[in-house]
Image 1 (cartoon, rainbow, N blue to C red):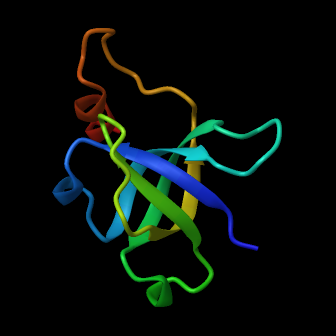
Image 2 (image 1 turned 180 degrees about the vertical axis):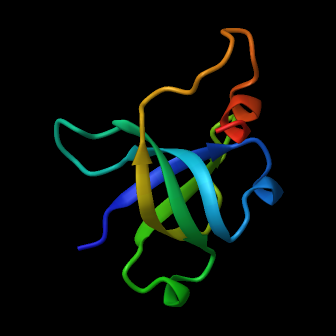
Length: 97
């Protein structure tokens, strides 16, 4: 059974197919629902390109849900923190990983 996740992006055009570094929230019902993970993953807009991938819902910073889910295959789960300064933009800090 495929798992479902959600991620938040500033602009949909910033999310590209292929390998990405992103924070995801687990949508599986139960006590671990909404757990956040930092992962390296392969993304695709079309489910048939990653048949064994999980469902990834995309939301904007303001919470708008994109109408079509993407497919994601987790390559690596990273530590639950991003090094940087407290005032630094999170997305800029993530690009430095």
